[in-house]
Image 1 (spheres, rainbow, N blue to C red):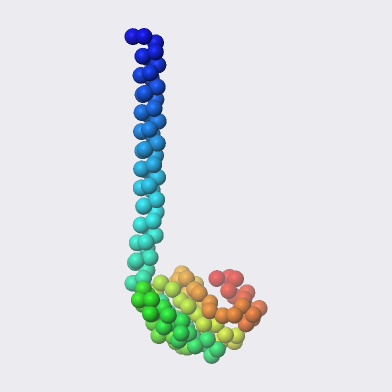
Image 2: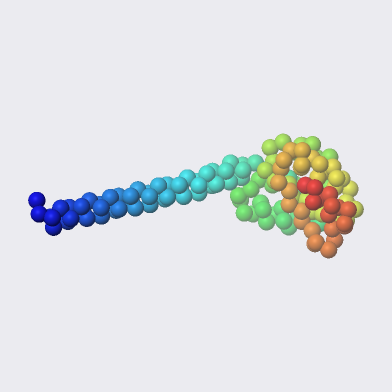
Length: 141
C-alpha cells in the first residue's frame, strides 16, 4: 500500500472520529440542557398547584396584587388576611406574600412561621417604610 493511500485513510479516520466526537458531544450537551430545562419546568408545574398565602396590613390592602395573580390563571391564591395567626395554616403553600406596613401586628409571628416552614417570603413594601428593627429581623431570614 503506497504511503499516500495510508495517509489518506488515516486522515479520513481522524476526520470521522472528530466528527463523531463532536456529534456525540453536541447530542449530550443538548440532552443535558433539556434535562435541566424540564426539571425546572416540572418543579414550577408542581408548585403552581400549591396555593399562595397573602397577608395584608393597614397600608397595604393587597387586593389588586391578589387579583393580578388570580387573573394570570397560573396560581391559586388565598384571600388576603390581616389575621397573622393564619400562619399556622401554612402547610402546603408555595409562597407567602406579606403586605408590610411599619408597626404591623403579627410581623414577628409571620416571619417566624415562614422561617420554620421554610417557605419563600415576598415583602411588599416601599423600602423607606421598613423600620430598622424590622430590617434587622428580615436580615436573619
